Length: 92
Image (cartoon, rainbow, N blue to C red; front, top):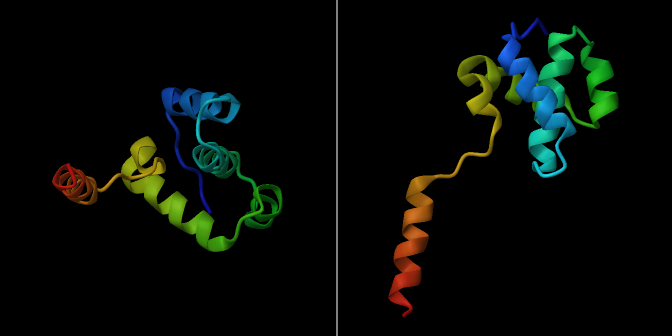
């Protein structure tokens, strides 16, 4: 896998995410992945260190390349959320 071509700001934000005590563990793990790819670590080293599989690497590196930092964070489907809100209002 090639470099992620991180900007200085992206690198700083990813590093901050890996050190944060309040960020979700899954988000910190994705941040570590992108930093490891940027540093040129091998797929095998990443799999061993993060305890992930090649699908994890492929999914998140592809998403990062397409969407940058926004692609790493969990997506909330507005449609799903809205439908839950509508159904909860009906209960009252």
